[in-house]
Length: 149
Image 1 (cartoon, rainbow, N blue to C red):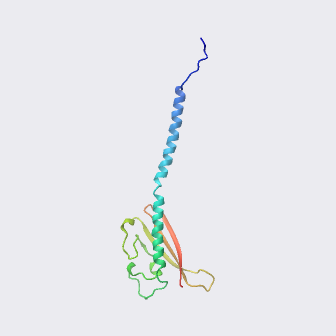
Image 2 (cartoon, rainbow, N blue to C red):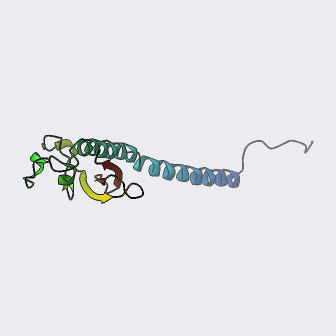
Image 3 (cartoon, rainbow, N blue to C red):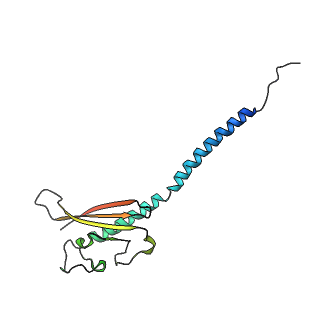
């Protein structure tokens, strides 16, 4: 009888080690997938925040630089110059002042401050800063300038 026959298959120890290694790899892969899936809505929230901030920036920039009628502010419905928006803190509204219900989880804050855009004498200018906070609490800040031209 020849003892040159080869064994085929796996031993019990090799099988247990293989199962442990595959289990560790699967656990690492699943935890990475969970982290990625948990943040998958972040780009959508950020894009929505950016769209809201751009809409407010456009609305504010299109207003007059100085108060055209000299009347005191009577609320959002009659904002007629850039300075009227300073200190605004609200849920998103459209240009007519109507709340946009589906964006209720967002918050918009506006700050307007005088700024000098060049060496004196330079035209008066205002820095407009729009900050939108998404439902997850992440702020997005958009800033622009409006000169008196």
